[in-house]
Amino acid sequence: MENKPKFLCSLPWEHLSIHPHGHSSPCCEVDWGSDIAFAKNKINGQYTPSVLNIDRDGPEAIMNSDAYKQIRKEMLAGDVPTPCLTCYRLEEAGGQSKRNREKIVEEDYLRSITQDDGTIEVDIQNLELRLGNYCNLKCRSCNAESSTSWIDDYYKLKDEIHMPSIFDKLKNSEDTSYEWVDKEEFYEEILKYTSKLHRLQISGGEPFLVDKHSHLLDLLIDNDIAKNVHISYITNANYNFDKVSQKFFDKLTKFKSVNMSISIDDVDKRNTYIRSLSNWNLTIKNLKRFINEYPSFHYSVTQTINVFNFLYVEELSQFLINEGLLSLTGKKPLYINDNYVFSPEYQSANVLPLDVRREKIDSIEGKLPVTFYNRLKSNFYNTDCNELGIDWIKTTNAVDRVRREKVTDIFPELYKIIANEYKI
Ligand code: SF4
Picture 1 (tube, rainbow, N blue to C red):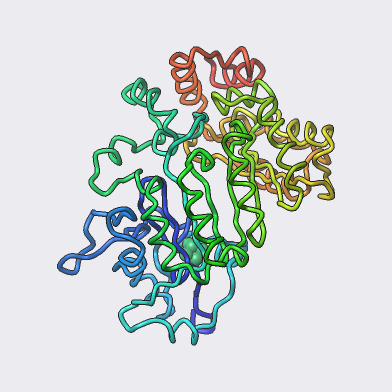
Picture 2: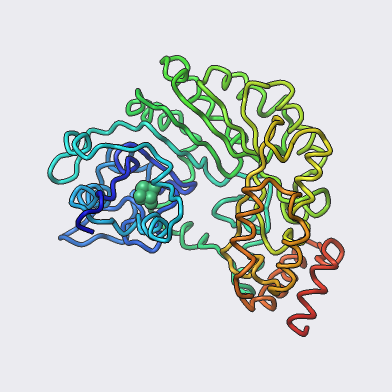
């Protein structure tokens, strides 16, 4: 490590990422296995199991928690803090990490604003708010802690199938609060630390259903901060635009730039099955209205690739191209981004046999944007089958039962391939 530059990152100094249940981490890509992935304090030299919460403890206590101070001290000492091993490992393997995408900071500058014990004067320039778990959809790959619409199904199924959820644990913890998103005092408190804010990322749940956060937009506009802020949203676009989100969009025109990412996973009935309770026609109608009525904003569709949509992965791009919204050379109002389900593993496309994945990938070259296609190929062209088809079938059938849906009606070809492969 001697001749290597220090592993420095601006985020532990200037970024606050708040999760739906009120916990905070230095960024959204930390290694969650680390003991200090979330803001916590020590008692008698040992980290407590208790996690700080934005509602109870506030931004100052979080940014100067023992965990955050340790991360800053370790970076300045030339070490890689355990939460940042995600970035470190990716860089060692030759990949582009989140750290690489953040602004480069000079060690001398960081030293000048950091006390010996890691304490800083809190100055949040980059803020991520995941505005609670209130959501109108219950997507197959989501969970109760991120969507209120999942909670009933979670209780019906939690003793029957393995789900990627710790909702019970969170619900019964004194460290959990979903209420902060509805408190004007929270937004007023955050304003005290954000005079130099330049980036604000907002997601949920469904953020446009959290009406109170318009107070933050008003505060940033009234205090002349909004004009310096690049703001971005992740939304499902499944609401009455006139009643729910237009008032937000009008305020957003006061920001330096606006990025709107709309989550869509497939086309028509398949999308409705994966993104349960969504309305395909409404999604596309809203997408077109956004683009037509607010042309200065930047738009993208984010498609999350999982076992359900893998065999049809190019159809969403092709649909958007036919609608005149997307072009493979990026010259249309919309971009399409790829995202991947790897957890729970039984929903990853690696459930499919390798020859099926290879045949599919070979057949769609030229039908997806190049970077999307290349990432899809690097994720699934050479990876072993994870042998979790039986788990996928068991879980899918159980969720179908409580939702009165039938995977074989919507994905007959997929079901047949997996049933044959796993001899069901
Ligand atoms: S080094 Fe990576 S994981 Fe650590 S704070 Fe920076 S971006 Fe996040």
